[in-house]
Image (tube, rainbow, N blue to C red; front, side, top):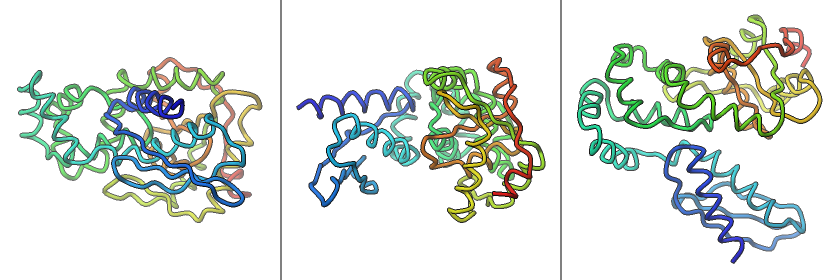
Length: 276
């Protein structure tokens, strides 16, 4: 059917976006009152049921499915999947794989790969990532593990930042909002640094108010809203914005400067969030 063909193309597009294999996407449309329900299973895992507007067509199904795949992106790679990726890489870059895995654990590699996927950023070629892990001694220190994802993201920016920005520009001119140091410090007081990465612990109402403040500060019109934060706080601010629809990506100042993007958007100070 047409929907099956569209789902196959969507799977291919998701793989190109994320840089990892996306398993087959199975869906079932069920009649519900008053709206239809969309049940998705990705790699055998069920995702939260999606409610579709009455009379929704193929485009609505594709959009909801795309969002579900992207939300589940970190779970697309587990230890078994990573083992297959390592085996494939070992065939072409045996020395790189051997050296990297003599310095770091496989779980550390998985942690970094999932860090890219968590923010819907394309995973760099695995041999490049492994080469970085083998050569940079900071990755060999267990005490540095909480910073590993950000460190890899910054070091390998050439492999992801330009395609990411080009994709956002396809929606129109970037609408950049910057946060003052005081505003950053306020927001990160409600973020916990866990082994898996920063996790926001603010209640839904407070997060919604902060997101609204960011949205209201951006210039009106089409284009992707983008937050730019300091390198030190970027991951924590991104945790607060995670799950927002439409997505609000968060870049560091260094990443934007690396890509040659002029940082001339409005600034948000602490007052905007205290009022919210």
